Each structure stands twice: as C-alpha cells, then as structure tokens.
Length: 84
Image: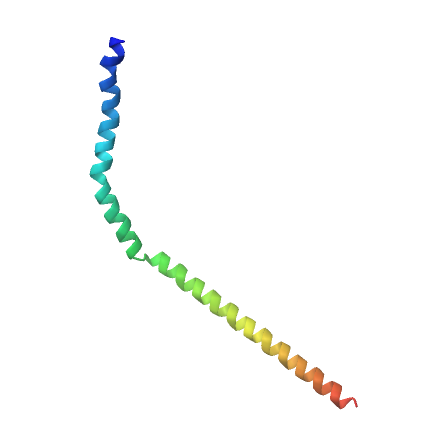
C-alpha cells in the first residue's frame, strides 16, 4: 500500500506536466488554426479556380447539348411538315 502511495505522485506527475504543456500551447494552436482558416494557400486557390472552371465547362456543355437537342427537334418538325 505504501509503495502505491509513493509511486502515485510519480505516475500522476507525468499527467500533470502533459496537461500543463497542453494548456500552455493551446493559445498558440488556436492562433495558428485561426490564421489557417482565414488565409488561403496558393494550392487551395488553384483548386478552387479549377473547380470553378470545371463547373463553367460543364454548364457550357449542358447548354450546348440543350441547343443541339432543340435544333434537332426543330429540324424534325420542319421535315415532318415538308413531307405533307
């Protein structure tokens, strides 16, 4: 029982030191996290620009398919009328 009481401060001492270190570094980590969220790195900006370009390309392709479909429908309608 005495050995446990003697070893207990040694065992808990590491936990206390670790907790004190975590508390001491918490403000630094918070500032770093905030700065990371508020700033955009070059690679993040490139990724965002690439996503925007792909989205615009997809929209242009969708519009082009819609125009082609409408043209085909109009041609088919004209062909059907000219056959009478």
